[in-house]
Length: 413
Image 1 (cartoon, rainbow, N blue to C red):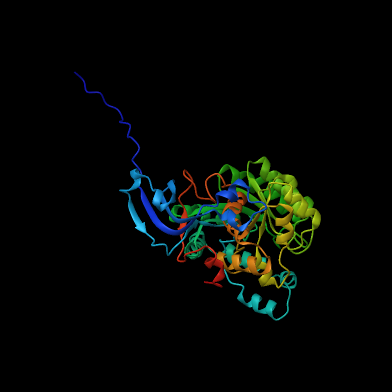
Image 2: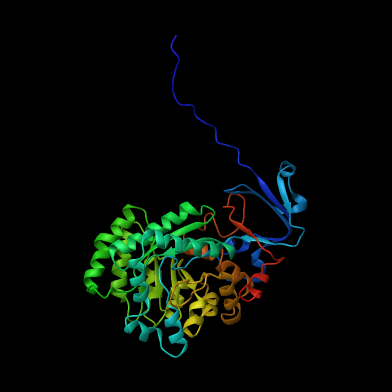
């Protein structure tokens, strides 16, 4: 009699459940989701008072008032928050330039003394300063820098973060930056990293415009798609950077390769790039400091998220984006840090929420949605992130405060 050999199919391990009980509030954002992030009122944060949540490492299993906790979860290991701390979805920073080397502190000092962003760029500074440092840095050096920054973001409550390339401006350097994001996913599984190819951030000084665009369209974008190194492709369409025609060519090449799109739109001047983003079905149009009424209408009538970056307006001493116009017209609005070495060196998303309240006149539900549900939409992750419900990802945060508003009431904490 011969013994049969083969593999034994293992049954899936039972998830280990945990719970938080007696939270002052559990902010589910249920109504924000039902309204698709549009025309929000403060009550739409959907706060469950004296709430509880049962979860495993991946998913939420139950959520509701602590007094209604089902018997089947009574034996689950629970932490009693004693109604002193609130729970909300993990923050989502949907626009950052996390991967770069070098410093532009001296350029910042010059801007504070009166030099403009464009003047510094025309002298060979600005983005190109960072490009030189990033090209010289090794992949390992870039990873160490990005890892430290990601851990800072985590401490601010950020559980999902978008990371752009864009400081390589040639094929090899851009690929190097995108590989760093892949390594971040492996090093920090407790965070979700979304990768964006931004080769069209500026033009390299050592290449002709058409030559560099051809390289992106014919070589880099196909290879990024083939190696699954980026979920998104972004283009800086603005005065002195990419024209509407150039930007559209890059974005259409990305779409053809199966990569979703975003647009740096109408930041330094109005180019109607917000309208282009809506026309092409981009996930987001970002910045929008100079957006026109036509651009506002285009975003309001589309699924493209208006991602506002108030820290950048503050850094550049520019007027803030017209958040109220966008919101009142019915657009979905996200709030992000735009963490970058030149125009917003901050990963403090709660600070951006504060600026949104003070200078963009956003109400509490609009701010909440801006860093949760609408930010998830900007990254194409709204099916699993951005609100709290059974089956959603369990990357919520327990706040050190008893209400959500404390997060942006405390300036720069």
